[in-house]
Amino acid sequence: MKLTAEIICVGTELLLGDIVNTNAEYISRALAAIGVDVFYQEVVGDNAERLRGVVSQALSRSDIIITSGGLGPTYDDLTKETVADIMGLSLVRDADTEAAILEFFRKRGIKMTDNNMKQALVPEGCRVLKNSCGTAPGICIENKDKTVVLLPGPPRELTALLDEQVIPLLRAKSPGRVLLSKNINVYGMGESAVEDALRELMLGSANPTLAPYAKDGEVLLRVTASAQTEQAAENMVDDMIQSVRGIIGDYIYGIDCGSLQNALVTKLRRLGKTVSTAESCTGGLVSKRITEISGASEVFGCGICSYSCETKEKVLGVRRETLEKYTAVSAQTAAEMAEGVRRLSGSDIAVSVTGYAGPTGGTPEDPVGTVYIGVATEHSVRAERHTFGRNAAEREYVRYLAASAAISAAIKALDE
Image (tube, rainbow, N blue to C red):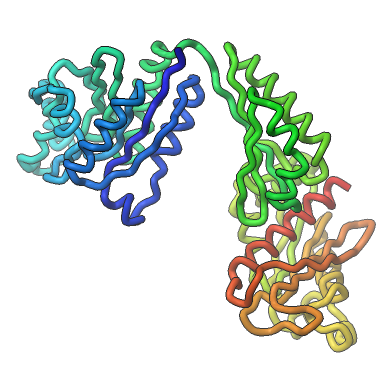
């Protein structure tokens, strides 16, 4: 029988949104890689009664329970005590952990407070998982057909314990099936349109599965297969990806590439090409997104933030008559901006952005949300009109989508 797991993340700071819960994502991916299904995830505050309820429910329905957080030295760190009580186990002092805590403070020349020794208490009969990155050890309790793993909350400590000790332990318990996923990155097609085009493929396949996830201006399709070996699962996933390409291939910009900007930089480096940008309403966002990718220095020529008409004219060479006749927000201006920055930089491809991000501005013909994207290459110069956002309050949303459209235009120019 396939094992099921449940993840419980403990910490009031998670409920308040003070920190992002990256631990659940990391644990889920690690379990999926060894074929363990995660059916439930919970976040609970530092409250013994509520934690008791969540853990008790998890024990009633899941084979493996993994918790994160609540193993520290302070009064509100309650995970270990609560779980031990539920499972009828007393807490005992672990000599190795106590010695490790004393050494931790001695090496750093820090005076240790008495409450730190709370971390040396562990449930009787448990497996203690040595924490090489902190003072709170991980704990594994195996009780009949249940396995409960308690991990510290700091991500650096949790990931090390999970990768080095927990996953090898759980892999030995799993029935040997592998769960493998790949992501198909889609741009230029909305989630509903993607679902409509792929509906029969989604409904007709149980293994591998195909599921859409909406992102800002994009769609991510996750293909997941379960098989006896990693190679078999990968073959199944790749076959599904080919089927998807046959239907919406024109809108796919990468597989597991993470982002449009990563796909662009990767492709530029592979082809030995360069790109430059000229931006108005995005104010440098296109350049920022490109240069946040490692290796961008090899392929990024320059970025010019030409917010004013004067800069468009004097720096980029946009003709005054173009600005006066068509305005700064027009296909003609976008094309000349792209042509100008390509001429200045000598790059292979140049993209430009000009538009009305809002909340003010716009015209009856080109309301707020209207953006023109220019593209210049050795062979052609062109511009396209886009409309983003649904109301005048979505300035940052319009700017982000405009930057995405510019990056996508550069990718398409490379493909041509």
